[in-house]
Length: 365
Image 1: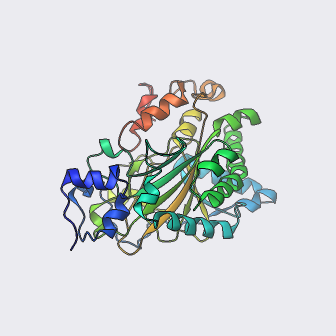
Image 2: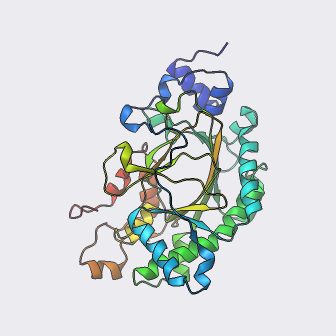
Image 3: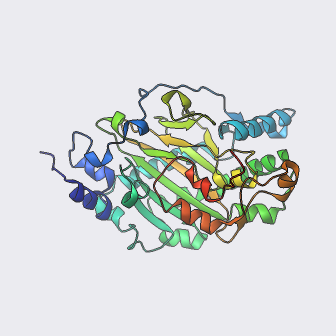
């Protein structure tokens, strides 16, 4: 017989003791607990398998040939409109992508006590954190997700502290993706008429983090969300989907209606790229950080593995001077990225409201 949880006991079991949503599911719960039931406006009601947005991935190998200009145009156009696109022939080996998915399942299928050693406050390194939801202590409804987060500081630190179930593949994934990230950033800045020195680009992606997200099968996906509405905090996010689907992006400039959300369909061998807040700020609003969310699945557990590339915490970010001169106005104020990040992680997911921290009153961006 499945155990019965009141809200306090559930929070202790899932969050404080580190059992996570997976522990909740493994305990035998047959319906969604009250703490996970989202308000109707936040639910993702499209049936599983529905794909409202079909699009071809961008082939990065064609940057070296006669279609270079088209690839550059497609990348810039996607960053200016949807804020999301997919890439193939990206330089990350297919075998590595499969190994990543296997490693994620291996980590989360461990007993709870093996994962709980990485809980905040007891983890052997501040660079490694296991948890559930986003900011559970501040959320009205919890997200149906567990995760392990690994911040890269050095190879030695990663080998010493990242979980052995996934450290090698996560580190290789990060390293083999960075050339692609920098190539895309150069394209995006050059499209704005700006050429940045390599040292500046290095600082803009100086803080890197690999997450492994685990979305257990849910008894009633219509009541929950895997991740609520949000945009990412940094420059570019690289995301590996596992083929099950459930990632939705909101079309820019629309309201929060179901028809305004497009599913990013899983494509074998492709990586999803999306614009983050820092890049929107630097581009003075030309590139749009994508508001997105994740639906839970009722069929089988799902994993996704993002790489978040962000500026160094000590980096000052604001609209690039060349763009302010061109546009005649700065749509955002300058801010220390560490301050922006603190603000971002200090509250529950709420769409793109974090940009209000730097947004000037004279803009509707």
